[in-house]
Image 1 (cartoon, rainbow, N blue to C red):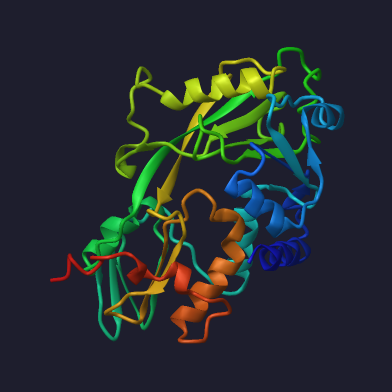
Image 2 (spheres, rainbow, N blue to C red):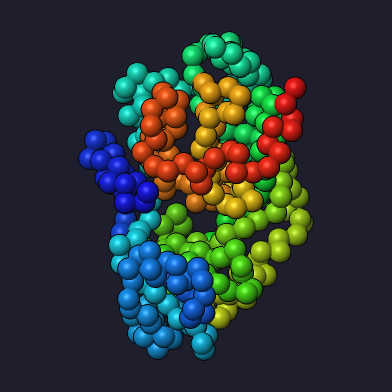
Length: 322
């Protein structure tokens, strides 16, 4: 799916005249032989394996503990999320679409014609696609579905260089991802200095269960267990960075038990399609996800095998049926 997505992002760049991606390369870090690391090596066709000395020579900001290795995917890069969202919305409007912001959905009534009631009015349509992020679980419960969706509150952290420019982690440095580390089984990832000049984004690819309605209500004194994990990691792998974050924000993941997406028709109402559970890795795949949801909604044959994304792969999903 990723090559198809990359082509579609390039098409959107051409259509809007906006740069949406920057090729930076990706460094994969972990113990040799780790199943996830080996799977990536095979999938990407990466044959070059770097030890600590080779990695430090190529990317001076990185350090590898003894017994670990690095793989480099030179084709990877960064997607500028804000620009990408704006570009998609602009093209959507250009093709006749209407955006309704600040309008809360109150009720969904299934049927041959689906009725959606919001704080601003009532909408009727022959088909409905629900892509409500962390709020999806609550929406589909009223449609007789109990999906195993867990919203997570993620600490998004930015770390300052100890000496500006000395760590080699500026805007031209690669992204990185850890795989198979016992201290961070969900993985740690990092992006070069983009949002905040001089600050590198390094985050734990996991978080704490949360109610999406209250995600911004956590007191400043609330514990942040991921910070200790990240600080320890930075001390070992990125010694040119300070060990406490300079900026800390939050975002939401909506995870499924297997961390694969849900892209499927409602088991009882085939004119309602659900896209959810993107588990922190859905945005970059948005062009293909949108295509698949459209195909499902129109009753067309999907472009990909959808078995991995089926609602019914989870037991008991119809347990909330009326």
